[in-house]
Amino acid sequence: MDKLALKKKRFSRRRIRVKKKVRKNTELFRLCISRSNKNFFAQIIDDSKGHTLVSSSSLSQDFPEMKNSGNIEAAKSLGKLIAEKAVAKGIKKVHFDRNGYLYHGKIKAFADAARENGLEF
Image 1 (spheres, rainbow, N blue to C red):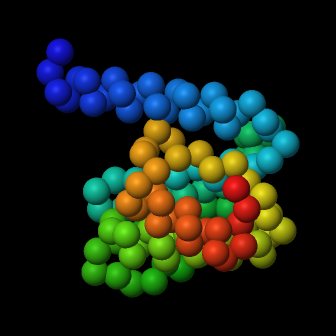
Image 2: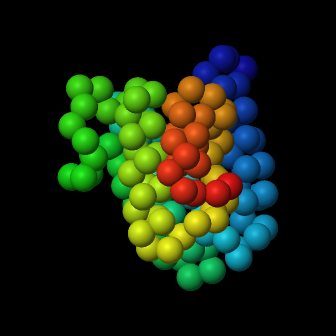
């Protein structure tokens, strides 16, 4: 097995493990994140109804203009933005669905910024 196939296999295992834990409890909304090398995306989902309640990305209009929208600083500002939108809609507690990504770097910066601005998870 080559390195790329092994990396994809580990990622998919982590993703399944995280999703299984998060989706057990449907009482809380799910803060799901996704990232690429250039951009960062986040949304708060109500799994019982299958609706997205709040969403934002580094491509959206309300995101502050940045030279690089895929780095740690962009992740921090997106965490702040999504937390402010959620608190404005009355959402305080969520499950953090890191979607298989390691809790490190951009993901950790996003989560810390969201916690500082009012979300609890």
